[in-house]
Image (cartoon, rainbow, N blue to C red; front, top):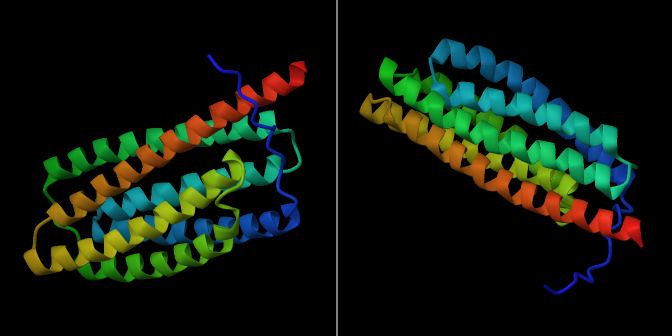
Length: 209
C-alpha cells in the first residue's frame, strides 16, 4: 500500500472568527431547542421533537468544539469522531422514533408545526451562513458546518410536512420528515467519522517522525 504523503492539516488561522461563529450557533441552537421542545409537546409532532433533540445535540457539539480550539489535530479529530458518532446514532434514533409515532397514529397540529418550523429554518440558515466559511476546514470545523446545514434542510422539510399534514389530515408527512432527518444524520455522521479517523491516523504518523 502506498504511504500517504499528505501534509498534516493545520488548524485554521481564523480561530477567533470561528470561535465567534460557534458562540452564535450555540446560542441559536439552545434557544430553538427550548422552542421546539414545548412546541412539539403542544403539536404532538414527532418531527418537531426529533428536531428539538437535534438542536440539543448540536448545542453540545458546539460547546465541545469551543473547548478544543487550540488543541492538537489529534484531539480535535478525536472530538470530531465523537460528534460524528453522535450524529450517526441520532439518525438511528430518529428512525426508531418515527416507527413509534406511526404505531400511535396521532395526527400532529399542522399550524404549530409550520410556524415553529419556519422560525427554526430562519435560525438555522443564520447559523449555517455564519459557519459557511469554515466548511472546508478540519473534521471539527466540517462537523459543525454539516450540523447547521442539516438542520436548515430538516426545518425546510418540517414546513413541507406541516403543509402536507394540513392538506391531507395524515401523519405520514410528519413521519417522512423524520426519515429525511435520519438519513441526513447517518450520512453526515459517516462523513465526519471517516475524515476524523483519517486525521487521527495522519497525526499519529507525523508524531512518530
